[in-house]
Image (cartoon, rainbow, N blue to C red; front, side, top):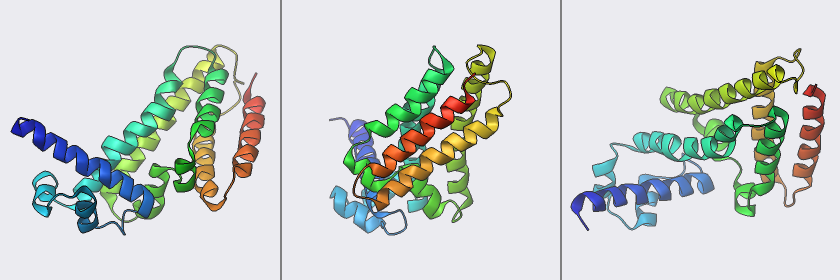
Length: 200
């Protein structure tokens, strides 16, 4: 393996393992030593690729968390088709698709927001960028729904977008408190009812 490829592979190993540890154990309690122990790499390897844990945290947010939210919750909003059906499939199908591991640990982005968003301005900006991208996608879809007469003209696109994001992120956190999916089923019923109310 070429040196450059080996270096990129090492960086990817650190990034992936860090994401997993942050997700399972929290950002603040996961030290560089714990990451290196889990990767079986040296501290020298870590500091060759990342100047600090802060830099690593920002890389995890931008390269792992943002990608995950974009692929699961943002990109589908730009699909062609009926706006209401896209809303339903994006939110309802996504919540139903999570494996037990994800249900037990919640949403990685939400975990970061609750743990470190008020801890460092750089983290706040990186996380807000994801929310703003998600909100923009929802607003565009809702406006499209108004234009094709599938969503009521009277609804506030921004308000609906914020509500949908907040409810989705909230249930991801609340689910961590329970051993079954009853709470998720209630959320799904409530979300379905809400979407019915904004339909034209």
